[in-house]
Image (cartoon, rainbow, N blue to C red; front, side, top):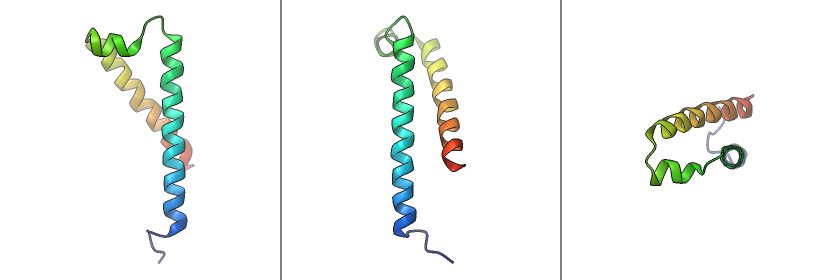
Length: 72
């Protein structure tokens, strides 16, 4: 039985975690540029809960897609 904390497994997990976070951040920036308003200002300053709910759903869906693509 292989050791779970093997250097290869740990390095792979760190690399794929960083790659997934970068892709997710890039997706959010692109989505923010495509919308006609500033997402951060709408959600935080104006407290638009409907937009926050939509963005949370999109974020969960995008996270699942990225995770599934990295697992294989």
